[in-house]
Length: 255
Image (tube, rainbow, N blue to C red; front, side, top):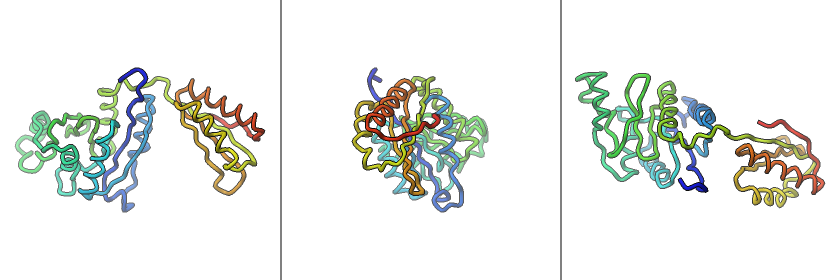
């Protein structure tokens, strides 16, 4: 990656009809945020998709067209409703094959019992590589910058951590990110648009967001988030702009 190149964004795909029906509540996104945060990395986006094969293939085709690092949770088993392996292959435009290393792992664990059904758990897109599973040894797989892990949390989370440490250690950042907050009082959002835009233009390496009070009060929370040095400079610029414009504020804690 070039010195001034923007690092790839990180996204997650959450798969399963049970998530969309409300039968189960997703636990992966909060944990992915935590695992990434421990490495000074951030989640940029998340998508939730049911078990519909056409929609899942369309989703993966779109995410594979980007440079993003993507973690996909669920649908890699051998039952008929597990379609992630097939959809990933179709989205990448490659065939499925029985992965030799994956087959060896299953044979060591199950012996001849991998046939005729379990073997399909390692029928992956051509070019896929294994993601070790420290819980029951049944591996997930990586295809380029897409990483497919089981839907079971206790298996998926250490596998995600392994991928981040094995393949993306160069993207870890010990500094992490920090967010500064300030509250604006008795001022409509419309009066702050140009001010906010000017600070954003001058500090493109941070994210600046405003959140009005939901109960209708004249209170707006502004947040500045980014690497510590850049966020500190942008926050100082935002506070100075408020002061120069005569906008009343009050300090808030930062996180």
